[in-house]
Image (cartoon, rainbow, N blue to C red; front, top):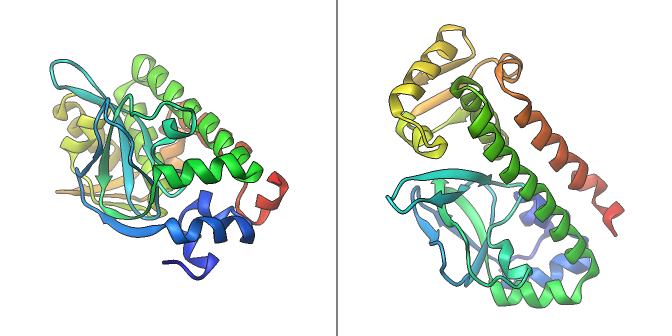
Length: 244
């Protein structure tokens, strides 16, 4: 049970709520720890809970018939999982799986739907988030089709450090390869070049971003486009009241 609004600030959507809105949601929020590779909801399954990550990162994965998959969006402290419950979809079209372990607030899908129907503020906030998330999904598809693996890797690393608010990532090259839908050898080569250029340091199961500006300069335009859209649509906490 949450008693202070400051408890919600680990997640940007919850932190953007004015007092009367979070008071309505707080009794329904439970802080939970998510494990790496934990399956939250499989493709086609009914959505029973939504998650508002604070330190965890959750991947939305498109899975093929042969079992291969690719990440179409990453959800961290800026967002939530389970948005189809707000559009009447009820089930997930994609697999939702924890990419990086951490904490998140869990809420029943039914409770969120009820508050969504009652609150103009929450409805507008969530619709803006859906818009931003769709931008990320569309741009990820374009990036995976048109940009080099090196540029894709730079984009992916920048998104990750944004989501966890840290330059240190606990991630394997195999996981990155799985998220981008490529061979691990390609990630090893691309990461090695970034390491040699002094942009990152990588060791087994760990990557540290050493030169963020340099990494941004190597990334394709997709990272900047998606970040600008999130910043435009979802103001920081001190600007949140302008949504009302």
